[in-house]
Image (cartoon, rainbow, N blue to C red; front, top):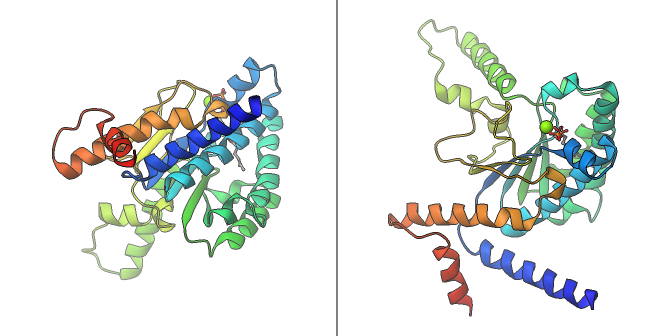
Length: 277
Ligand code: FPP
Ligand code: MG
């Protein structure tokens, strides 16, 4: 009986994803994957296991985003600040990155299946050499994938991203040898790590775990058009049902913008339902 129920449930999810993907779909979603340790504590697991379960959740969310047709997903996998955590926890996260990055790129695995290119964004020189080697290999393995992009931000900090961009812009300006040259907002934007890998504008930023902070993540990229959403679930518990209201809200706003009219909540998706049945 439970097999039958699972079959119906999974068919229901497939249908829902198909319906949602026929509306306006965000091009770029960012995730602050927060709450792994509280999830571990609540479930009487080790902190390390909380991060392992967090990785499983990342795979699930990536699969959902791909089926929705999202072109770019950026995740905060390790903040520069996370180096201040205990050496045990930092080691566990680095080992996780080392083992799982290659797993993700293997033949028939998620990145190949959906044609996803992997970019690791941040101060990569701070990663252990063994992780840097794996990162390079994983990026090389996926460099020809052109359907979607996964930006794994590690070790990343927004202020560092902006400072690095200013430094690059100043270096560029110096080579021009023109005393009147002015560095503009466009120059800083163009030299951001996110722009250098051609990421589209950030449509939605989602943070889990009930904490309402940006924590030095994609501060420049969050524009007036970015929908910022805070979810109360811990990251390893996130699933399709947490994303649905967020996508519906995006579609409602996108429809309003295009039609120039006020559309009541959910009416866009209801009209898709009516269209299908
Ligand atoms: C934040 O929760 C989470 C992290 C610091 C790590 C996130 C990493 C993953 C989900 C796995 C990434 C996968 C790869 C392949 C690198 P927290 O530790 O701050 O938990 P808390 O808020 O409950 O303390
Ligand atoms: Mg946290």
